[in-house]
Length: 122
Length: 108
Image 1 (cartoon, one colour):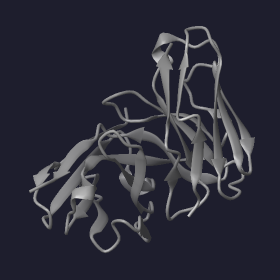
Image 2 (tube, one colour):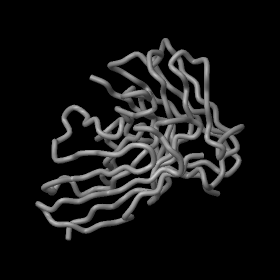
Image 3 (cartoon, chains in turn orange, red):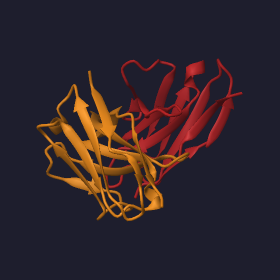
Image 4 (cartoon, one colour):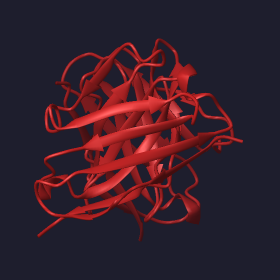
């Protein structure tokens, strides 16, 4: 069955870096658009980044553009989020989410990882 | 950016009640709207896509309607497991994908 397991979260100082991983099983990453979505403590959901199924396009929220990079390793069937120049406002649970097509859009999320907590604090 | 506004932000109801949550988009998004349910400490769960398409395994007491800018999620005959936070999401265009601020459904 479909499963996604995130790892790589932790506590980091402002200005530091982290790389999140999302190991997928039960489906082929390169056949689906993949997203990162985050949720600050006690807050709502915020879309972070998107990688098109064929890897040809990447999109980012303005709040992370130039600092975060989404990528994947097809052999490992793993999605990544490289996060640089971290700020306290990046503190959140980060989820990877599998894109799902319905109607005329493929920007729904039918499977989510369990989330990994990133805390940016000195 | 397409702004999604949910109302109410919180609602209290009893088991067996019917609850309606609304979501308004700042511009037309056709039927490209999803509803998610999130319980504390858990990832969101997709309930409805394309405004009204119920995901496999989701109880039929959940229903969605709307198109353009105005959408509703209705939960009929509330069950104890339905008390959670609900989010709408526009899937019309990115960047960015945007979510509503959430509606917390509590037990009265």
